[in-house]
Amino acid sequence: MAGDQAARRELASTARVRLADSLAHVLGDRFVPEPGTKPDYYGDGIVVSGFGLLERCPRRAVFPPDDYVDSVATARRRVGLLALRRLGDDASDARDVATAVDEVLADAADWPVQLRRWVDELDRAGRAALAAATITWCTSVLRLVGRDPRIRWADPSRSTRWNVPDRLVQLTATHEAQMGGVVQGERVLVVADGVGGPADRIRAGYVALVRAVGTQHAPVRVTLAAPSRGELTQVAVDADLLDLAVDRVTEHVAHRADPDRSPVVPGRWCVHCHLLQDCAEGLARVGAASVPPEGR
Ligand code: SF4
Image (cartoon, rainbow, N blue to C red; front, side):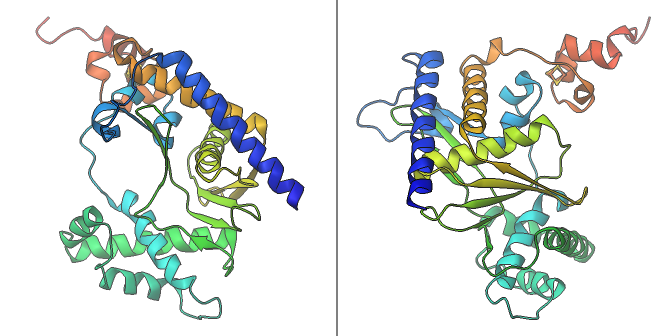
């Protein structure tokens, strides 16, 4: 076991050095904090999230929509985690998911402020829709992973953050649960209902990387749970996985540092892109470029 721990420390250390070197290569002397000032990562720097890394078109990742509003689809995970944390307090607790969700919705005092405000504005039908979606989310996740007292469900108001030393670059990642500790070896659970395939390794690798550099120990593995497909995919954390994540982060940061030079990758996703009307490649992809302007 001691050898395993040493290996996981080595993996984390190597990834940390490689990430710092790769970012130095693409950023040079840019995005370096002013000595003696508190770094403002959101205002002056680059904050990397798993969401941005998984975006297939770099231009869209660099210029994300700024009109985010909560919805049942986005809120159900956070409310669901609060409910699962209640269930997780006592493995012998026979309380069912619906009861836990009702309890959580009735007691919003400790919720993240933005989520609480959004739920407060829901009418009765909206709250019922949120409760139903949350119960479905929780039960489908539990069906996959089981109800195990060793599972520690994540606090939805927190994410894992790591500030790259001497850079205005911050990595943030979220996960849904973990088992084991840093020293014994973490097993991290990520609920990801998107399309499987290569994105799965990027998603798993990024979460593993952020936890590895933050705790100075690589997790043992990341398990991806896809409730709608009924699939659990276990991804072992090794040097290849962390290298993949470092490469992806570096590529993403390079695009963010030079946003106007970020490339476009048209695809079927263009039809939903908020940049479509100003993107010739996207318009060509969806066929709108061939439509004559009005009046002709
Ligand atoms: S329209 Fe398509 S190619 Fe253009 S920015 Fe959006 S996703 Fe990228």
